[in-house]
Image 1 (spheres, rainbow, N blue to C red):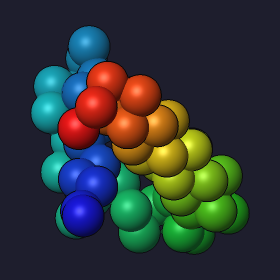
Image 2 (cartoon, helix red, strand yellow):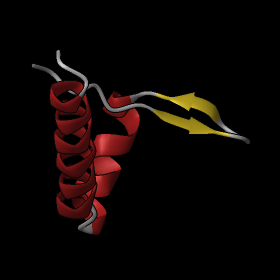
Image 3 (cartoon, helix red, strand yellow):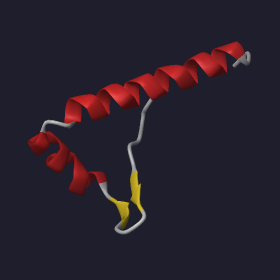
Image 4 (cartoon, rainbow, N blue to C red):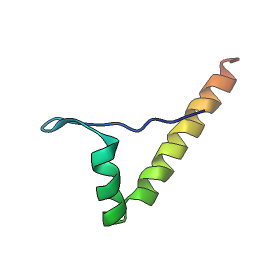
Length: 53
């Protein structure tokens, strides 16, 4: 499986991971972002399992 992270901002529009990942790393936010992505992915997998997929 692969999780693709995207950021859609109402002012900036679609911001590429190439742009925001280095900033998140420099600000110390990459770990919380990664935890959120992993939590969301696990939640989705549980939904798929419960639905019989």
